[in-house]
Length: 286
Ligand code: FAD
Image (cartoon, rainbow, N blue to C red; front, side, top):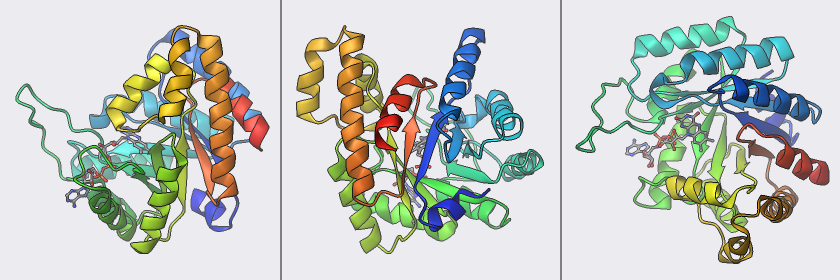
């Protein structure tokens, strides 16, 4: 099934993102958590891909398993940093051979050498180059990434939205956003995107806070801001994971409700391969 068919019919999508596990215990943990999340009948599952293909085998194996053994609708993440056209064409054939119909096509983060330069060669400079290459085959439903607080390399949100428009014009059927905690960034982003002529669904990305120290690292990397009042509430409980969990899940429930009540076309959960928080949030909002 193509995810755009769900989104374009007006059905709200609920989706979960996983990354390929790195060792035996994380394989076991992922299996248990996918089992829990399956009970929620998600619209689709997505599987991340290490930039430069660093997790390729593990990502492809997990996709094949979820799509063909479990039978859930699956979306493959795929990045083009340092990729050649031959390599991408080969990988697209592979996706087709394992019946993957949905892709989120990304540039990926450029690896840097000691001088801060990207030493690799690539036939694709930006995600829009990859999207137009893959869309020309007309075989997949394609998603692209969006950044309500602007991509960290962008000079402004306006420029970033212009680049996002290029991704849509190149063939992206919908957008999934970077995680954010302040819904006003998402609502403003959608309004600006519509004014810029981007009319595809923009699905918000949600990351429940269950570990404050870990989330601070993530947000530093991706540029998402945690609202000051939430920081103040969480700060005294940095080492109390139970209390952090309760605060984080309560916050996410309110955030998700507000998004859905105000027209978000669905919710995409960054699960970090865990299920408890997503199950708790989901049970309260669906
Ligand atoms: P692009 O859209 O190419 O944008 C990158 C930067 O270049 C932006 O600043 C943009 O404004 C600018 N730009 C775009 N086009 C042009 C142009 N023509 N001229 C000048 N500047 C331009 N990373 C992974 O490695 N694996 C994953 O599985 C993964 N999944 C993700 C899923 C989601 C939903 C999101 C939001 C991000 C994900 N990422 C993943 C991270 C992503 O790879 C990085 O954020 C990366 O730095 C940018 O990727 P992009 O596809 O947004 O790039």
